[in-house]
Image (cartoon, rainbow, N blue to C red; front, side, top):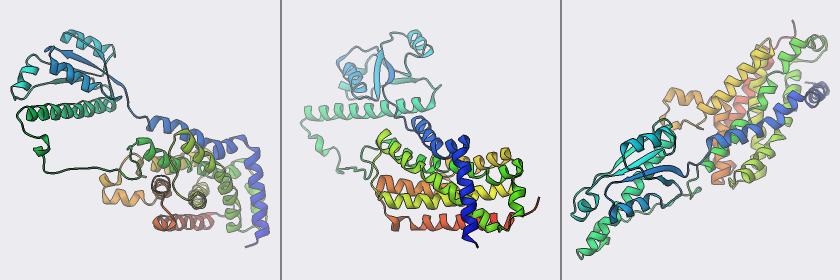
Length: 376
């Protein structure tokens, strides 16, 4: 392999990347834009859900229970309907997402040691918000019930410490506050860094459409020299977006980065090499840029969202689906990215995924060189 010819192809491809505005934006700026938009869409913590309280008991315990519901920023009591018609109207108008109905006799039943009944009406048009409201109302209700039970035991002269013989203390490592953003943003970084490969998938398809492939065929350049010369500039251009994505994650979304920065950048090169190899393989097989871009979107974005563990946990995937998921490089890099961001892992902890990326990249690079024919 002549490195002089490889460098010539690299120089030609780099000039095209820097001169063509579409390729430049797709390679360097679109990963950051994707991260900002998708990060905002997927990592919003649901807070201040508006609920109503229909207090038919108007007692001391009912007022304490309603105060307990609004004691955190998860729920906010904003409406006080007095009839089911008002409950229905507030739901239709979108003023509240749920209404807690406290029937008459709530205070009497609690003081008598009987089970008190509370009804919760939920607006199910938004399942995510509705599920959040159900969990929060249930948690506050359990906490209030425990307080009432402890008060009754204290009046009876029984210590509430005897209530349970198990002292359960939960400590969350790596993400003590259990912020959804801390888990989602590092995974999204792994997904959006596959976007530059979509530009690389146009490399040979563009040559065919523009008629410049004939000039390359007439030269003595070999197939592997052409493929290597095309992949290196795209990897280098894709690396320019990695620091921007890291800065956006750390300073924009306040996600901690606990790993070694230089090791992470080196692993990003390995990931880009793997995705660019697949992109060039797609470019070899397709005859037009439209088909190439559709194929690359299917391979990288579809696998990134649904097969990488970003939205669907591996624990609920079947064995065949899980095996298929690990055939995509995005799956491996999402795991690497989360490990470096959240856990502060090192190279030894993720070396299996790194080897998988190298194998995938080398395999598809060889297939691209073998499938490319120097003829029209």
